[in-house]
Image (cartoon, rainbow, N blue to C red; front, side):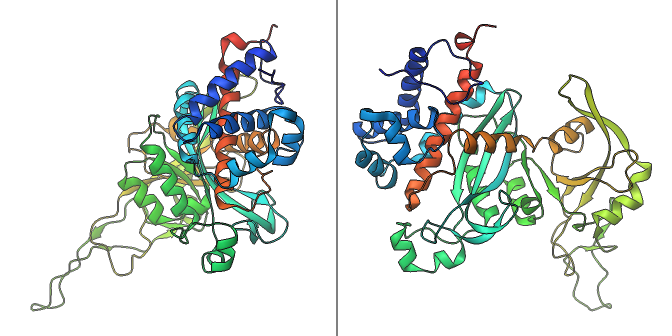
Length: 415
């Protein structure tokens, strides 16, 4: 068994051979249920080694060159792009081993860009990418991650397929996109990932997400119906009903008019920016929401209001809209608030917990940094739909192994 030279220097090791043995055992554990042929198990272990070992590029050709005689290019290429093993089962097995070790505090729903040349990689087009900070030629992957006090672990990946791709049979054929794949928005893909992970043997936690997800009222309602909690960012222009809004049935039109059946609000909704400006000054409270890098508590001023949101309110509602938290951070000496969030956590949730969750989403950037910078999440150069899912699943497994290595007392590097 060859030794493993781990690329991540922050991982404490007790010797390359010991790491290699643990990696081999971990690979068998997370791949066993997903694969259906012995050669797939072998290739999966080899690919994991290639992702974890040092090397600037984690695409197939340079990985095979580094691994030497242990890797066969044609066999690995077939394993990635053609073999019908289930990548979701690899992500599930990884999550169920890692999540209990990291003290999960939240799940984060997000998306990230995969810059690409050309137009043949599945889902690629000129579109906005937060990774690029502009419109560029890229794929967009939607993902869900569990974040905790001791680390993170991805819970699922979905490749966003733009409408023009869905409607182009020739491009679909060349990229081997299954016939059953239809157009879905990023929030729809995210909801599917969340619901799938919700059935695994891992701890559920509040879902965090940016404005693209927070302002999707259908997504929030569906997550609430599925008994998921959430804390989503919203824009200052998003509209809600003030806390004292009354929803009631209007009187019938005349003595013989038909009775009204839809509840009407006694006022219009208003942008959260205006609502906060009107109500927050008397309701601001100083909240400690996390410990800083130096161990000192981090505090800020927040406002917490119970509001209701209803996207199509002009025609009334069949039932009174549910209450949600409107959370606003408005630090002292700032003329205007910094950020706004909306949440379905219970009405008796402590302010410190709401503020902590609202300010926790930044951890996802650390996850993407390691997944891309160290493990080659965005290095896959194939043009296969299935290959993208296989690659992201194996990167997830590599990431999970490194997380467990950091938490493994037997692997501690001497001080």
